[in-house]
Length: 387
Image 1 (cartoon, rainbow, N blue to C red):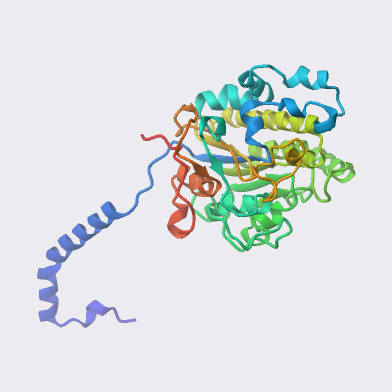
Image 2 (image 1 turned 90 degrees about the vertical axis):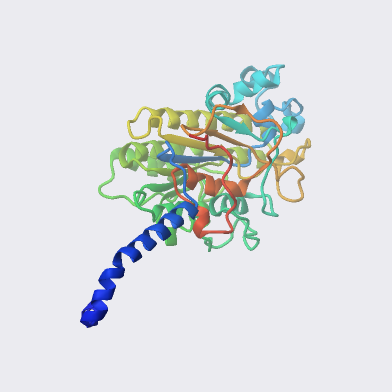
């Protein structure tokens, strides 16, 4: 192919040469103006982000601990005795009570990071989807906006691109983004067939890369032979072990982790097991945090965002369910700890926050702008400390 410059006559070429310094100066000025005008992403210390969801966990338990009105057989469905449950989770002081239930969140996250959503202190967090249950909530937090067509937990694969899928396509993140959760619906929520994210969604374990170890064979056997509350799901403990193994071997940069038992046991009316599951989820979160902080690639370079996909009703019977029929189900909470989040502790008053802000927050923490290509996405949460 003949290059355009070779067709210039001598006179034109001479004029071009004389004008070149002027054009160079003009281009340099224009490029500088573009750089100044462009919305730059602030440099962050965070290199890795983990989003952890404790499914359907109410803000009431997060901020005041065990609900005294439900510590009985009549309303709380306790199979354990009231004294047994209180022996683990009760104090007359609500702040001491919440520390008994969530020792990691209140002894570590709240001291080193921030916790949002205590409505008793005027910190209001809510979903923006109109349904107030799981699939719409997970979709909202991962795509950055509420898609009204997603109106069922049995909805088909999500047609919207989520922040995990998007990050997996960015330089430095390819193959370093993964989904781990106890609920089988995560396969559709994150559209695993399209996104090609490494995923454990309920009993659907990720494909192996070679001959299975004895440990992996035992895990598959236990999953296959353990009775669960919903077909295709696994208990939270079956998520934890492969998650820790994956972190140690694959060194992912972005993770989604979904613990589902807090919602499952609430639907069955077992408040004692809701408390146990919440306490275990807090312990699992601490175990993951401690594991990652002990590794060079994660130490002081990792942010955890911990939240719920929806709330629940607040009555003596309504706590078992959620959705628009159960007022209060729209209320959520969020806790954040990491090198870019100032240790402000428990928030009081404004600003209100929304679930849709989580997607852009994840990308902003690692210096990426999810909103730029997804204008429907809400702005990040104000949890990034100014450097």
